[in-house]
Length: 150
Image 1 (cartoon, rainbow, N blue to C red):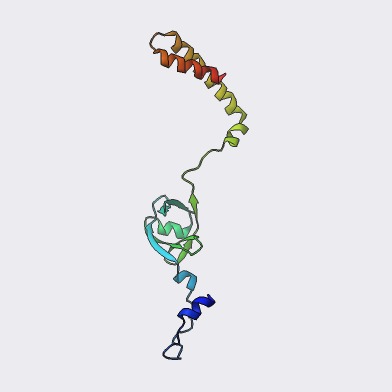
Image 2 (image 1 turned 60 degrees about the vertical axis):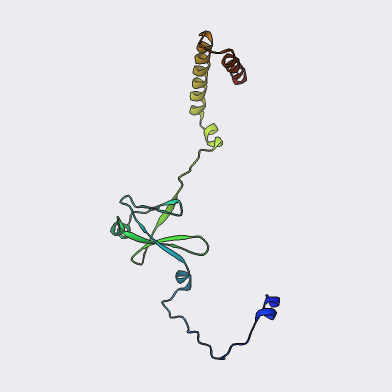
């Protein structure tokens, strides 16, 4: 920064500082935030930046149901939803919620159900192999797949 100032700094034409002080009600973080309007649905949800936000049911959010609300994104990425200057509590709803493999393994009932399904699939494949409707290539692929399952 020192090098930059040495190369590009210049003296002002007038020494008078024309900046004014901030008023008590002025909030620079709010002024310099990105603000957009969105319609709050009847189910108290809205979409912003490919994320669906669910607004908590409060007296303030009930007034905003079906109306246009202000979505304010700060510099650090936090999102605030407001209706007529009043903050509405909301959380981001995970659309792409995935079940992790560990959660499946922990469920012992699911393991039993999957083994029953696998047994049913093996029996179905054996019946399919007994019919003469398969090509030699399909039959070979099915036999290899059955060997890998065991």
